[in-house]
Length: 263
Figure 1 (cartoon, rainbow, N blue to C red):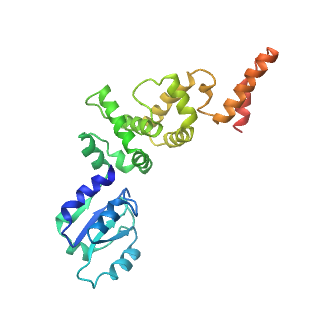
Figure 2 (cartoon, rainbow, N blue to C red):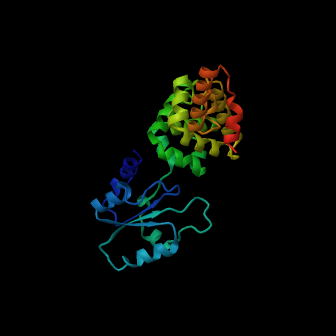
Figure 3 (spheres, rainbow, N blue to C red):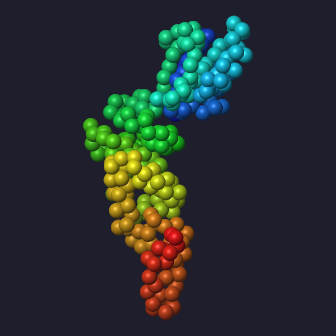
């Protein structure tokens, strides 16, 4: 989806000799159809750079070839201390062939919603999760619009990221089946969300995580223990407890066992 969007930006520039494509969030992957595949199909050489030394080495090899068609992919991060420096190429490049792509622009064009928070560009961890789960992020945006046609707060962005990563609808109460699937099948992703949302990225993120925790903690046993424990440990301990109860009538307390397992 993202690749087709980038290719759509490049297609009108097939006849140009030089294209400068700024990609501050590094959404373009080396070797992907966008940009390498498109460049190969249209006779361009790609300079895929984030450092000035590499850029100069690549460009010097092509400088004397007047027939060369070049795409410079500038991967300089926003507010980078050492941005790429290429005033000679900027002078040669036509204004219409200078492009900047951002994740927010992509999401805005895909959804028709101008209210995407700038945080989706500035927070690398959030943007990476959205890029890794593009289709699910767009699904979560539609689910937000089902709840409210106009609202789009930072907390909604965190919910979209959570929903896209965990493959759940973050704008409704999760069912017991969804919690079971989340805790077992997506436990690794759940840990990633916990780490990201609990490391000081903002009060909104903490509140979104707290709401998810509340839902899981209210689930039936053993699922209510899954958020803070390894799923295999929980299942083994719960199974052992059930067996002991069947054979001895003794209720085996799991909370202490799980607490020890986390040490």
